[in-house]
Image: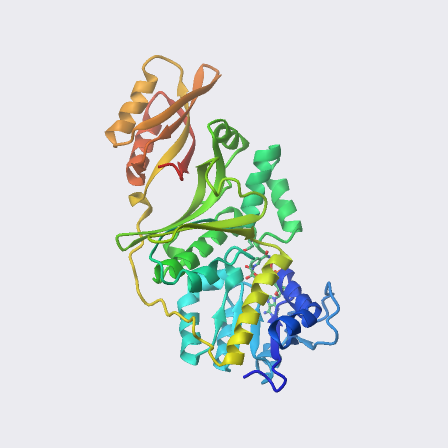
Length: 433
Ligand code: NDP
Ligand code: HSE
């Protein structure tokens, strides 16, 4: 229940980039909420591993503690916001908070992508709210759309740029041809990257988000382990430049689909035609394109990372729960996700491919390549010779739609041909009919 004055008390666990944003906005926007919601959201307690840590805002005497019990056992705390990240102790703190009848907001995709089902079940059992808008695409209200507005729609495709750090890196590599490492360091300084930025650049962060998106979109249990993941560490300036010359942008995509009861969940860099709605999404912006049987297409776009965009999403959740508390309707969005639709192995997916090959520059070479591809049902759409290097020719190909398993076999055999000097790059191409 809301307290006597109708105010709702909130605790924040973890004073890092996001937690400080949430706590400072809770203090700064009191009057705004009183006017908008009719009651206050009050910051009641803070948990931080090192309570002496210098904070970027004045906490106005709000108690700060390193002991989770001080926070979670406080009977006045109604909503616990978890912004610590990682699996443990975040999981225990959330479960303990739910056990004590608190509602929880978390931005923790690491945890949800592995243990979402257990956490959702715990919230459901208690009739508590567990909201997690900021866990996918930061300030972009995509989970709210999937959980509420689009709940009646049989969705077929949910395709997104859901990692701000990699989008920032790819955008700057395309615009200025900058060095990968330097740009990543800037993303870290700006607070976009994860504590371990390898999870951004290796696609794991986006993989976690793809698991959450798939779960909500297709109402089935999907974990990070089900998602095929490739990152952007192998992408070079040359790849981006060749793609650009051929009319494509390179993006790290999360592709979630349902076809005939099977789920496709994958994250990898891909070429997108420049006219595709996701191709122009740059910097740390995220966007998710959703397709449904009756809906057609909807695209949501906005800031996917950073202190205040993320805090804004969290506070949207807090306000929604506060409203649920006020009207006695908590738990109304809870889903249990106990269905298990099969997830397609990567070999079964069908897409186009972009290949950069270094080949001996002599007659008949192209015929050998097309013969090998043809043997595995892969046909070519576009071929471009780009350069000659010490008697070898660099060729860029775009294929028609092919089965990934067939493409892999063809690549293996092409790699064994005497004329193949190097398979430089293999990328998937999305968004072309
Ligand atoms: P940070 O690492 O900046 O912050 C985490 C904070 O939690 C740190 O202050 C850390 O303390 C504290 N903490 C960790 N463990 C404990 C503990 N056991 N007890 C108390 N405090 C603890 O992470 P972010 O703020 O960037 O991210 C927080 C969460 O939000 C993560 O789940 C992340 O994936 C998610 N997220 C982040 C976004 C972003 O743009 N940064 C966007 C969307 C989601 P210390 O530093 O002293 O260890
Ligand atoms: N590291 C993440 C990103 C934070 O770059 O998108 C937002 O989830």
